[in-house]
Image 1 (cartoon, rainbow, N blue to C red):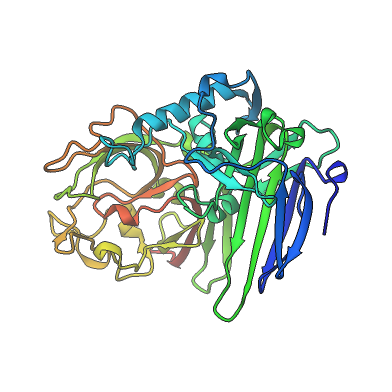
Image 2 (tube, rainbow, N blue to C red):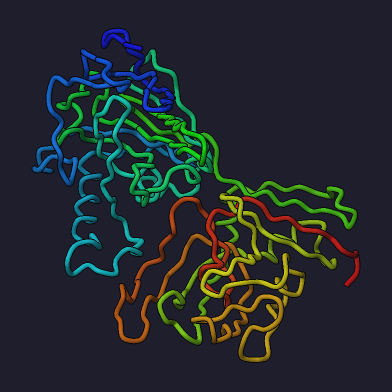
Length: 432
């Protein structure tokens, strides 16, 4: 289906591409093509210019960037002007610490403010380079968005809204298959305003592709493209929330609380510090501010009762986890009131009982007197024997999106999932 350049849909849109049995049928927009031919049941595109192969889609001279900006309206409604020059500075920071560069090995886990350049090829075949959207939010201190709205400079374009949970579950900035949602700033080694898609893209374009790969016996690949050309502003329309559900012993719903992100952060206490008995590789000492789970339960009908609970995260995982990654496991499907209000069972030096984690598969985790909590503000001590891996950290960092991490001092870091969305409590008895 051909779409004339003059009548192509522009602005904010969602389009789908379905490939089946070698024949490609699709809707595309803002094409840089004039001719399409069919040969041997394949679609062939003839471009006016030849798009070059390159390692980076950014212009070679980053100092040639135009003076331009877009606006972010963050969780508190404040206006944050994001300039292209600032984005480039964070990209240059990435390039100076790129873990694939000699001398930078081991820097994959750096949480300082930097932006990795990523490339997404749009449905008309143009490779667009930019930065991961959620990392952009983190770098500009917008940490608790729940829903985003994207608005084009084109007054006739529809607004595009996206749920942040959907974004974090669908798009992965570490995915090598271009499964990213990026703020595009360049195409074909040119800034967007000078690129093959300049007429529609403006200086900034939001673009991402959700790809469903063929299942066994199903030769259909679907690509859904999310796009907003000539992006003018990004607005946080809803904040991240955590729902607290309290159930009676018969599983009937007793109470529901919806906590705004700032209900959590305003209650942060600390700083807390904990250390591991063995800090080899993935067990790192940490200092953090957080809101204790017991503080949250005190606001519910479960206060003072005999209860059990678990926590749900944005990908659908639940805690406690019975996963066996690195000998991390749990004998129980819930925590009980003593786990959260007194502390995990221990023998005086190490965690024992239902929630035992082992360091390197053999050493029980060290006991901690700290209570489990939800946090986004962590200072990691990434030092371990034989290495100075990115240590010490002088500042507090957050893990970005999805926000809010469960911290259970004494247990292994693979148990600390991000993206708390629900706390589900069941009252077993009104008395303990």
